[in-house]
View 1 (cartoon, rainbow, N blue to C red):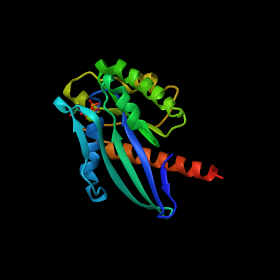
View 2 (cartoon, rainbow, N blue to C red):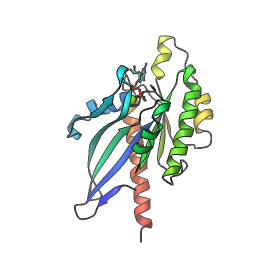
View 3 (tube, rainbow, N blue to C red):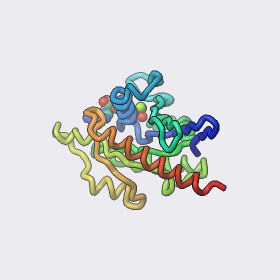
View 4 (tube, rainbow, N blue to C red):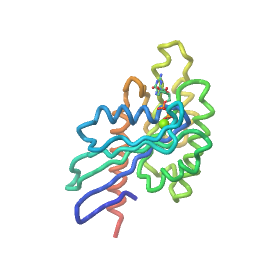
Length: 204
Ligand SMILES: Nc1nc2c(ncn2[C@@H]2O[C@H](COP(=O)(O)OP(=O)(O)OP(=O)(O)O)[C@@H](O)[C@H]2O)c(=O)[nH]1
Ligand SMILES: [Mg+2]
């Protein structure tokens, strides 16, 4: 669960962007970083391999101001999407409070999205978390490619593949253009804080 400091009245919430390699997780964070500069009081930490792939994670803290008398800080992370970095993905998921699953809308990545969301489910289990219970938003990214004549998956197909059972909020986006990037973030923050409030109520 989120880190809560009752004495200083600070809540730290961890949100992780998950998804297959090259789906646009880092691009989401870069956009948020640029847009929300005044609320970010540190550099974006990012470790990249050749060709801009995330090797470990991207990270920065976002200051949300006061919520119910608490200073709320959102820590935003991405995982490396490449299959071979599974142990790193697990590490990054430790203590996660909310997940944005970024799906790649291109037809050729269909299977990769399905494998990645299953991998998310498996890795959450390691921390006794159920994908059905954790605050989760699915982002259908790269919708802009349709305008370039590239074949993309229709929404019904993506919903059927990834969200038929979960039925979580799903948002069409273009991380490179910034379309719905902040909308996605606001949605996951809202869900995560609501879930946190529920959990706090249940504490003895
Ligand atoms: N057309 C288009 N390209 C995108 C979009 N989002 C990301 N890309 C491109 O896709 C490539 C991969 O984006 P990244 O953000 O690095 O992907 P990632 O999910 O962080 O990849 P890993 O770190 O390897 O897991 C880059 O060339 C981006 O510019 C989008 O919405 N539309
Ligand atoms: Mg990345």
